Length: 240
Image (tube, rainbow, N blue to C red; front, side):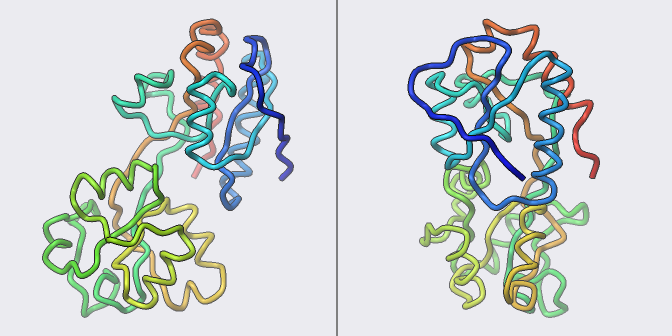
């Protein structure tokens, strides 16, 4: 999948070209499908698209400053709605589940007979049950809503690591689990010995809708086209 990169310097002018930032993480089949959806939806809204691949926090900063028009994908929160323009809740692009990577056959492997369940019958996260068997704590990508959730619930481990390091810590029982989007996790299970040593919980720590938020000023100047783009993104969203 080829992603066009552009230089970032002065704020972008409002026109029929929209520049979107995507986190420079591992590509998945869902990601490729999403890019196709964006291109189709933009065309239907009378827009052309350019993509930029950057770290997640830098994507956010550049969209807030107006150097990039928008980003993919983001969970809506009251705090973020003060910094970005979001569509109505019904115009989401995807719903992500965020399960846990845990050590296979370990204490937190909910598929293992010797493990206590950390999830309710509806597969939502049972915080009290996890706290009762907690050893080290959990982690998630820094700057993500999942990380903020763990921090708010006082469930974070003392190890603030990247994904690759976190998976090694889980294998060596130095981290209880790592919260990650299921689609990304399924791709990671295909790499190395991950499938042999790790398991993805069937329950999820959270489920969230994801959107394509825009810079506030850009949205105000292009409400009709952006709103049309958002509706098209929802209508054309990848079927899962």
